[in-house]
Image (cartoon, rainbow, N blue to C red; front, top):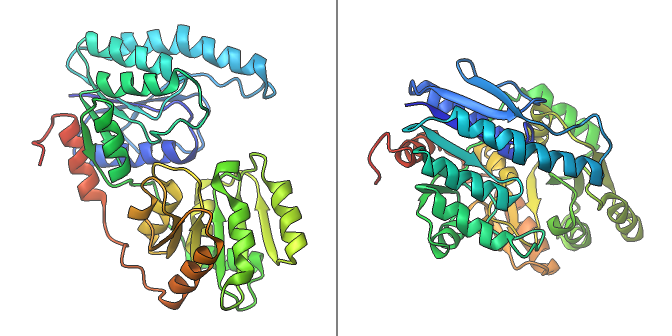
Length: 355
């Protein structure tokens, strides 16, 4: 039975997770078609059929015209195309969402056409606070035969919407990281013997970079804060705060290829995720797979992925959590999650019994 993995962006954490799932399925001999963007940051594993059916018009500047074109293309080209490509009895596994009301409609139409619909929401909270978004999430989970989730938090949320969740580890595609790659990041950061507290990922308001910057002076020993990620509006404010506090921060702002990004996480002494809201975190998942110690705010499902947690917004507790993790550098969370992820996905596709 063919599995159609549907991921719209072709870049970022959800795409990288989708490639990891594709690799797991191919090793089991499952035929896989990946439906994704025309422009991909990484090519999929060997043996995966690729369908370039999502258009992002990246040659145009960001703005309302581009957003309208993306929405029209998704509604009137990509969705009808998927309805033609996915046949009765095949699996349609949708990762994340784009325009949730349209996604919900697409999933119900795929179900009505006889496909086994599987959905991985990735985020079960409403980040943009659109009035139809929560309703559309309920419609997505109810259209799906199974919803694959990555935390107790999301399992409870999906159950509350009337969906049927299956729990899986959040596996990410990890390129090999050589010792020289780690050393280059350490040299770039100029640690000078200080432990590195890394903030990795998008610099977005809900990720609360400012909390890490404000807490850093309260740690028991000096730490070097390193920031690695794409700016979504918080870089200038973060730089200004660091300057006011007199912090020595290494700013590495931009979108980094996966191998560079993973090497940065591997080079850190502790990865800090002081988020205000979250379902789970690809950054924490990568760190866990690499055996790098982590600290996270106790929101959503982050506590299940981190070595130490703190109440969101409590800067003293954040500093204490960083101290505790640096004092015990061996992570107890590092292990092989691929088998559990494989079994969860095959169960969701009805290719093996559920446990």
